[in-house]
Length: 302
Image 1 (cartoon, helix red, strand yellow):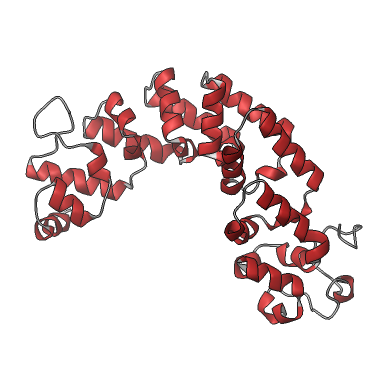
Image 2 (tube, helix red, strand yellow):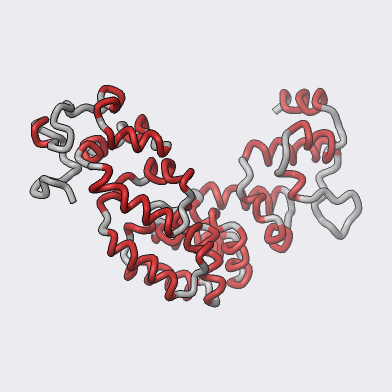
């Protein structure tokens, strides 16, 4: 699709004359210098593409400079809208993955057909492509292996695999060694049973993309320091995604007030959800039943 196919589009442009689509534009890492001279760049700006972000990425400006909108971009953008990317989201999509214009349209169609053959619904396919702009660059063979890994490792039914994929498409293409390490942490170090682990994955798949040490540290604090059971964590798994300082400050304040009670079977129960949601003002007023002045004074003692 590029006129000079003997040279990688990611290599620096050595000679301005080689950029034959826009021969009067000097190679640069600042698109602002020549947006007015490039119809293709003007189209990208209209779509909402953040050129400032693209020019910071190695090799991307040279690649973009060689593209002609009609020849290299229009059909790709049309394809994206046909598979469910909203027109207003095209700019964000291209900003995240401008290399989508390198992909063969036939290959991308095969990857969509694969999802359809696996009984993914149109709205699920749309979400997958929108939430993971790199999905259409990955072979169906690799995707198939990844879906198989999750199905086998977590003993999932087909509907559960589709649910996970549509809910968090990035996890399917995420670093597999990282996924394995976090799986070990959840099962062996945190002590969740296989069925509980699957429940946790389906409700909060982002936990598998967290830093392993941070995930374990947060669990240890919630489970051992706050005395919250595995069962209660499964009901409110977002507690494991809460920022450490928020969790520790709020729990510490409740303990200071004598209200840190998270067992629903006992009186004066404080729900974990109310602990991690809302602003500090809402937490202090509605959960701790105290004042910001008291909360601020407490934080100064830490």
